[in-house]
Image (cartoon, rainbow, N blue to C red; front, top):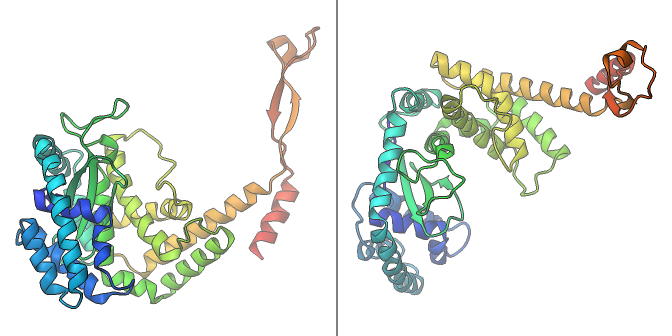
Length: 360
């Protein structure tokens, strides 16, 4: 299975405008079903090559959203201006865009470090029909505000800047950073999970494992509120995608110990650590995600949080003297001992009592 990467001028202007929230001006409200349906159809037609220029895009929107002529007319004028400005940027970087797309395609099919087989296993894992195609919009931007995100339906977007940074390691002559090679598989995981029945079943707490996982996560977020208001289902979504990223990352750095699975969302990061051993087993065996997966992941997460809680309640370290020489260590030196050394003292009875209290 391969992701189909798209980087035409039309797909790029679409991604650029989407990243900058230009389409939001067409919305009547936050629950505008007609708008979201229009965006899904528009995205599909761009992927399939049925919309190839700004006039075709605007005509499509005009047909789909005929109930808001003033908004459509204003958007049409603005989009033409956007396209004129972006087109010049796109043409100036045509060769760079081509190299980036080629590098992305080669990375996913690389014999040693590619992830085509991992993607195929994800289809089985989420029980998604393999006729369902994943598209990746590769969008060059003058200045990057976001790395990328999954879109509605069957696509995701990856943004990249067109100037190299001195502290970044790139793939070949392209502008694809080595640390971002896993992004397409990460975003494809979001797309496949979104289009699976499994996600809806989890939301509805279908199964004892699903019910336990959401209960454990609700407890976690009650005790550790997320600063951006993110909670259980999103944590699961990001944790699964983080596991896919880790599969690719370990191919590039097999001897590195990765302590962080997901940055800037601690709940997802902690959950991914509990998912990963089970995830690896299911991938290796080609198994479908089932309720037992949720149960085992929930148990892992619950145990891990309990251990962290106990560690946080252990007695603090005390300072003792540090011998400077072997003679001092043996107790036969004559000079004063200088410098502190940290020594942890453990009261096993106290630890057992605290562990019993946490289990109640």
